[in-house]
Length: 157
Image (cartoon, rainbow, N blue to C red):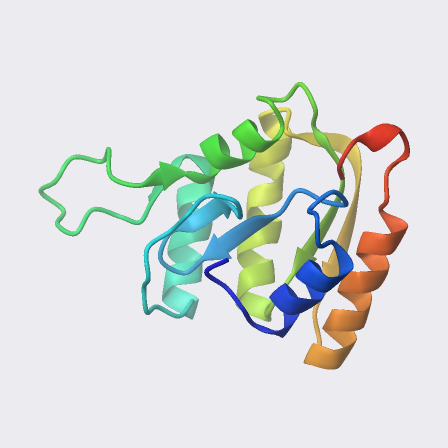
């Protein structure tokens, strides 16, 4: 509920009960999170430098980073832990994925996919859709993906 931009409004309108897809968010401050996980208010934008650090850190680096380098690295959450919990620790790996966002966000998400796959959270033959472009087109593409992704047997993509 923290995010309320046009894509989030499209997601809520197309999937008001949250049954069509499991949703993760890539936050410039908190890293990857299950979208159902509450987060505190923050004011940060994803920059080239931050995106490069997230990519270099892979799925095991905790976000947010400790406020001081002298603090232990038990601060924040690992992207891998968040995604693993969404797939019941690999028991229900993702079969279809839509990566939605601006270029930097897509760069980070795409770079971390092999790590999630290596953990068994993404099937090797998973269908990956990239949704990027003008906001109107992204909203259409997201709605289309959600409607096409309606799973048989009640499983979420």
